[in-house]
Length: 402
Image (tube, rainbow, N blue to C red; front, side, top):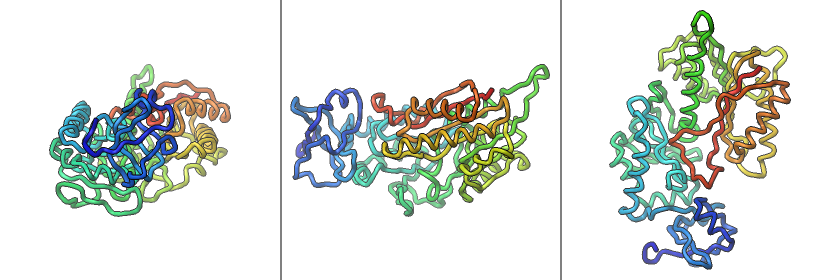
């Protein structure tokens, strides 16, 4: 198996079955590492007392010390067809309507530790730690992306820390602000200063769902669209706000975020779509504090709550669960009777089962009853290995409150 001089590493625990079923990770404490393997990251073969288990990437610095791969990315003959397979899966997107999306989603696409988001003609790359950066920069994957995805003119690396973009391939960028479309709607993203790669593509399908829900809310017997008020908390750059505006069935949309830059960007994205400026309002405030004011609070027909991740490890999970329950309960008090509440979590430590329990506890604390209309996750361009449900990180639920 593999190339000549490929290093072997060995399992100290009985994980063969789990890996063969599709779990892509092995943590450092479960591995026996030869002293001669000193590189930050390298292509290796994983074995146990029965022989070969998997091939993949060894990362000497990460807690996840081995990441399995279905191909040898250092061989162009294997890298190219695998990448083309991933690109083909994105062909279901109509790029004339959606020019912003995730092209490579790490383990879900077989490129462990590598994320590539497309913004029209620019591909923005991020890595899961320095080991993955070191490894993927050895390959020709970025040249192949530009060669086989005809819209891509530039590939840049965005560090997760506060550093400038690094040019990897193609033409130099003339601006850090990139325009793109999502389901025909216009957006701009600051790929240097924005969170992650600049925009959250994983909520695309849920944003479209919100638009259609608002648009189809027709009252009887007049068959007229009832105009609704919408509060988009943790709005970031206003993705859900813009989709609410696109429904043409809202009388007010409020984008609420703690960041001054985020609410300014939300306003800009609203204006890009030429929506009525009188409808959209921005509010720069801490959403946690805003929702705590329940006595004299304004109530909305629709409230969306999409907070940043509140748990990055098992150690912080219970604390995060309590914060989610309190936040969601407080938010429910800001919905009019018979209104709708949309809740999300992007914390990978919070499972769908955990999230459902959080919602039950939050509504109980708020003394509310509700019906579930949608319980979903990330879009199709954010796949995950079936045996690694922790990578199904996004939870989204639509509740109508009684």
